[in-house]
Amino acid sequence: MKRILALLGVVAVTGCASVAGEKMQPVSVTTIFDNKEIAGLGCTLTNDAGSWFLTSPASVTVHKSTGDLAIDCKKDSYAGTATAVSKSNGAVWGNILLGGGIGYIVDRNTGAGFDYPPTIVVTLRQLDTVGIPANAPLKPVSSTDSAAKAN
Image (cartoon, rainbow, N blue to C red; front, side):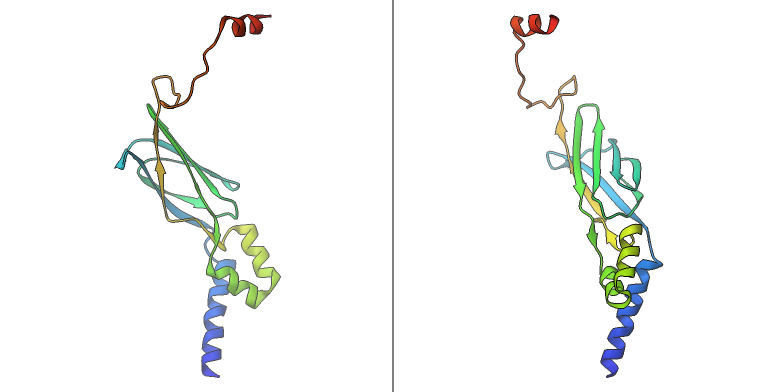
């Protein structure tokens, strides 16, 4: 009986944490190319709750959400993107057990019951001088293509 009460107490504390808990989360972004860290890229992190900016490597505090976090980094001849998947944390299950649907609804609406990975690594690709990936296939333009566009 004492074990059951102790377990319920732990679940209760965990469940309440997300309803009254953190809606923001720090995430760190590192950018790499060819297994080496490349610093100084401007990165935009975006989810359905907003957008945040940083210069890599760095950390920023983002608003949690049920939606994934898109990361887009660029500078000079480097660019890269990544997606941090939003996953439910343990507090969601405590709220479901104790509060039923209400706790879950609060967690979904505030994002408090969801987390992103704390560290995000963006793998970069090298761009040529005009901002096109160096290995991107190029379509040659023929004189008939140019004439058709002019008409």
